Length: 206
Length: 345
Image (cartoon, chains in turn green, purple):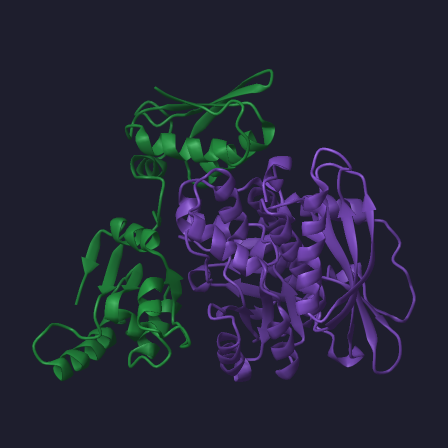
C-alpha cells in the first residue's frame, strides 16, 4: 500500500498530493492518505466521491486515515472498477473516445485547392459519424478552420451541439495574428491538447 | 518591494469570502428596508444596491474588500480597486467617487507597504474616472483593502441578476481561473507567465463591458467573483426565473488553469461553491471533472457575465474583442425554467 502524508499541509496541497499519489500507485494498489485538517479532508473525500473512487475513512483525534481501496477484493461495481483502473484524468464516461486532430487547413498534400475542398467534405461527413467524436482539436494552420469565417463553421457548431468539445490551440491563433476573430471553440494550451490526445482511443487526422 | 504580502495570509482575494450557503443563512430573517426609492436590494442577490434620487438618476452603492492575493502592495491595491469598482459596472452604472477601506497593522509590516497599496488603489480609481475622497483605517492583521464605491445609473437602465430573459445568450468577458492560478502560485506550481496573465486579468476594469451592455440594451448581468462562474450564474438564473445552460468547453480559461486543476490544485473555495450550487444544478453526464471544478473556482475581479439577445450577441462580442477583451466568448444560453436552475455541460 502506498502512503501519502499530507500532515501539516493546507488546502489545496493535500488534494494535489492525493492526486499525485493515485497517479503514481499501481492500478490495483491501495493508497492511504494522512490528513490533519478538516477542510482538506472534506475536499479530498468529495474529490474521491466525484471520481467514483471507493474509500474508507478512519479518524484518530485530529488525524484522518483515508484509504482508497482499488484492489480486486474491494466491493466495487463493474463500472467503478473501470474508473479505478484508468487514470484519474480526462473524460472517462464516454464509451468510445474518438478525437479528430485538424493540423492543417487542407486535407492531404498535393493540390492546395483540392485539399481545401476535401477538408470541407471531410467535415460534412464527420457530422454523420456515430457516435460523434469526443473532441476536435485544431492546431497549426488547422486553427484557421476553427474561427467565425471558417467554411466548415456550421459543421463545427453542429458537432458542438452533439456534445463534441472543440479545442483551439491558443499559441497558433496568436502566431497567425487572428485573435480578433471569433472562435468556434475554447482556447487551449498544450497541456490540455496533449491530455485530450492522450485520453483518445482513436485519433483521426485527415 | 521586499515585504511579501502573501506571507500574511492563507487565502486571499475573493476566496476569503464567507461560504455562500452560510451567508444566506446569516442574512435570513434580517428585515429588508421598505423605502420605495430602493430599486435594487439584497433580495435579488445583486452586486450593488441601487437608490433612486430622481427620474433620471439612481445611485449605485457597493463595497468590497479582501486580504492580499499577490506579494506586491501596489499590485494588490490595483486589483482590490478594480474588483470593488466592478460591482458598479456590473449594474450598468458609471462609478464616480469612492472611499478607501483599509485594515493594516501599525507594527509588523513596513508602513511603506500601506502607502503602496493606497497608491495602487488610487491609480486604478483614476483610470476608472473615480475620485477617492476619503477612507477609514483599522489596526488589524492580516491587512485587508478595498473601496466603497458610489456610481450613477439611469433608473430605467439598471442591469441586474433578475434581467435575464428566455432565449438570451450568455457572454463571459474574461477568462476563468484566477483562484486556481493564485493557489498554484502559492504552491509554486504556476509559471510566472501564468501568474502574470492572471494578474493582468484581475487588473482589467470592466468599464468596456459595462459601456457595451448599455449600448446594446442588456438588462441582465453580473460580475464573476467569489462564488465562481457556477455560483453567480445560479444566482442569475434564480433571480430571473430561467434555467441557465453553460457549455464548459466554450468557457475561456487562463493559460495553465486546466493543467493545474488536473494536478489537483483546486482551492477549497471551489468545493464550498460546489456545495452551494449542486442542489439546483444538473451536471451533464460526461462533464469533465476538472471543468466542473473550474466552473466553481472563486474569481477575484472576474469578468462580466451578460445576457444578450441572440440578435445582437455577435455584434456585441465583436466589439468586446476589439476593446481589450479578446477572449470574451458566448458560453451558454437561458432557457425557460426547468427542474435545475443551472445546467453545466
